[in-house]
Image (tube, one colour):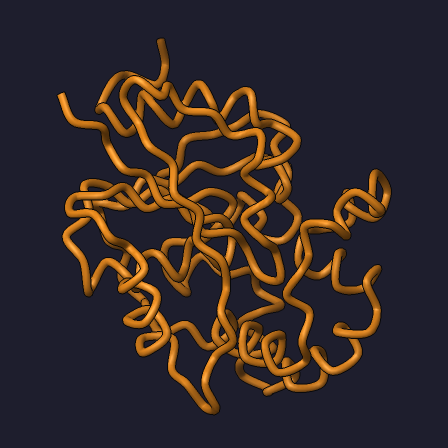
Length: 224
């Protein structure tokens, strides 16, 4: 039996190091890490997704995306024939974005945010991962936040706020924590709940995810 290839895409500003504790049985799966590349000037999310899709070298691969990476892998699906799309701590459409992000879109207020974030690691950590990251182990998380260029952050926040997907793809599997601060669970529908999971649960709840992911990929009951 050939192995299932699983590609992991981190969240905004983060490197693939956030997946270092995610383990899949090597008998069945082979892990591949994706990382953010700099967007081209005025590049659309769809064009960026097309570029990133070229990094997926295997047919029928599984794509796993966290936060903004979850948004990206949904767009990458347009250019691939994936076995499965799994998003973690993310959203399935712009309808699941929190109200303050919808207001930011309407008022263009998001344009005021990114400039200072690139220089302020505390503010960036809070914006990208939630307040838990600031309260707990900020020094450790600095290692994960390798993409802090102003141009990248400006572009990323604009893509999230202005994401055009209004209809949920029913094939997308969504894992979400009920304590997520960035994308509050009250706006999220049809997801697999991780009790106590925050926006950084890819790091803090990795044991639960290590149990869930193989079952989801193989189509097994996650409630066992």
